[in-house]
Image 1: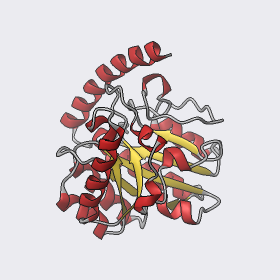
Image 2: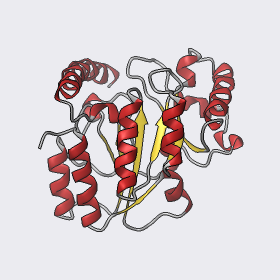
Image 3: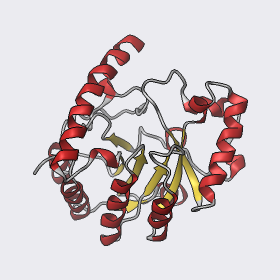
Length: 253
C-alpha cells in the first residue's frame, strides 16, 4: 500500500484501535486525559477539502479529532470548517500572527484576537496551535512572551501545555515520522527518540507494543492523497522542500 494515502491513514487508525488505543481531541485530553490514548491533531495549511475527507473518515469510525485552520484563503473556507465542526470534530486556530505582523508583538496580538473571533463566528474554538512557516524568521509562539491566550478563553496550546516527555509526539512533517532534520519549528523537546521513516514502520511498532501509552499524532492532510497525480505532485514538492529545510536546520544549528 502506498504511504500517505487516505487508505493508509485509515489502516493506521484501525491498527491503533485494534491495539487498545482510545482517541481524544486536544481539548478532551487536556480536560480529562485517558491512560492509553492517541490525541489526533490536523494542521490545515492548505487543501481543506482533504481535511474534510479525513473528518468524514474519522466520523465513520466514531473517532473525533482537532482541525487547526489558518486564516489565509488556502486554508480558511467557512463552509468546510462548519461541516467538519457539525459532524463532531473540534476546530482550532492555527495562528501565525507574529509572522503576519512582521514581528510586531502588539500588532500581532490584535491580529490574533481579530482572527480568533472570525473563526469563532463559524465554530467554537477552545484550543490553538502555532503555524511554523519554515521560511519565516518569526516564531509565532513568541506572542505569548508578553500576552496570555487564556485571557481569550483558550485552554491549550499543545506546544506549550502538553508534556512531551510523557506524550510521544509524531508529526508527518517532511512525509516521514522522524522529521527533526527537516523540521524548522514543528518539533518538541522530548525524551523519546524513535526513528520512524514510514507509516508501515509506525504500524509495526504499534503492533509490537513498542510505543508509549499516550501519543499525539499530527498530520497535514494535504500530504495524503489517493489520487496518484496529487500524490506524486506532493511527493516531488516535499522532496524539494526537505532539501531546503535540511540546509536551514544545519545553518540554525
